[in-house]
Amino acid sequence: MIQIWQAWVTDRFGSLTSVRHRSPPDDPPDLELIFEKQTVGMEHSRLQPKHLGQARALMEKSGAGGFIPSISSPPADLAEMIDIIVGVKIPMSSTTDDWVAIFDLLAITLRKKMRGMPSGGIIGIVHDLVVSDAKKRALAEVAQNIVNRNEFADFGNYTLILLDRWNVHQFHSSLVRRNEKVLEQTGNPPPLSAEDQKLLSEMEAATKNLDVTED
Image 1 (spheres, rainbow, N blue to C red):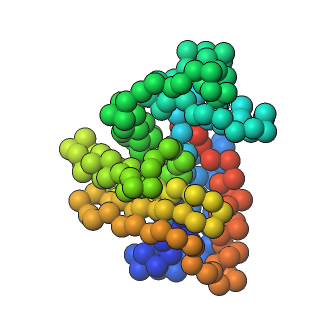
Image 2: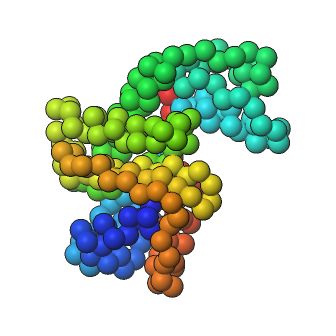
Image 3: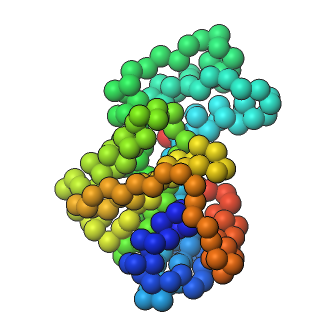
């Protein structure tokens, strides 16, 4: 994420000089990014309801593809989930219900990460929710709607970065801040210097196991 938004981050905080990883039982944040101008906390998460994570794990274990359960209507049990994955049962839900579920999940995730960094910081959220190419910006618009609400008046010192990776080479990323225009980047990550690559490797190692959002 920092690689994708390197120009924005450098302009705001200065050059990134080192990364400090904080692991349990340390308190949040997950990372401390040491910049020329200041140290900035960064929290990571994956926007994925628990039942979707379980479905993907089952598909990976079987080595076969399959259908994904509805975001807003979790299977009642494991048997129903398997029926959905193999196509015996068609998951039923409305687009409206799915986006309401995504809104609620994102709002809860943001508030949780903010509690871990009460003075502000960067919140990085990876997602692979089923969102059509024409609606890649929709999740960022939902996020903007959330952070601009009165309930999130304290979001001024935070920056949200959303990342959707289509594959190892292509991505769509949005940068969201309270009362500011949403910024977007799509395509291939920019090339890195040897020093930047070293820092990126440290960050990837530190965030290998992302926190997965629970229901």
